[in-house]
Length: 206
Image 1: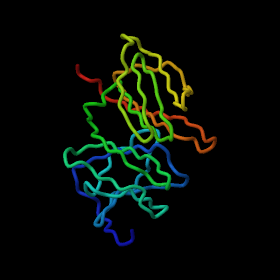
Image 2: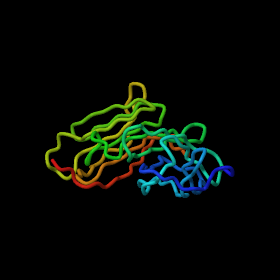
Image 3: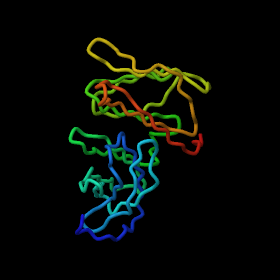
Image 4: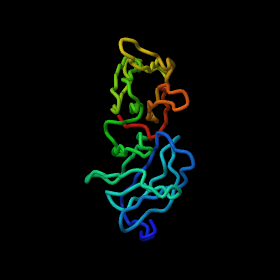
């Protein structure tokens, strides 16, 4: 890091970050390549970050406190605005998932699921059912609940022939919000759980 130029990147690229979880005492991070770096900022896990300007379409997310690269991110050649989800790895780093910020397949009312566990997870949202293998992601549009403000949602884990329900609840139906749901193994009790993050959007124009 000491050899890097401290110049801020001049780019039209914008990235919003969201970390599934954060290690203890992470501190601030910067976006760096061999020539420049961004201003320091905090990685969020409860909301998307403010737009950050990367130095190029290939860069590292660098921890200033730990003095190590947490992830290497490669952006697609097309598009200027992206969401980067940072999924923890067994090595204590992050595996990035890049998607367009204006993803036409991820609209208001939709839910993005990522399974960062060692077992299949599944769910029922209204009348929409899904299953998700370890390491995979999917975007679900809940269906079959009319114009109600809430619909029934069930999230669970497939353990051999058995299904273990994690949560059964009422889920709000919203035209101004999309959600990110991360399944992961809780290090405190070694059980599969999940956490959700809301992102507020302008209503879609149908």
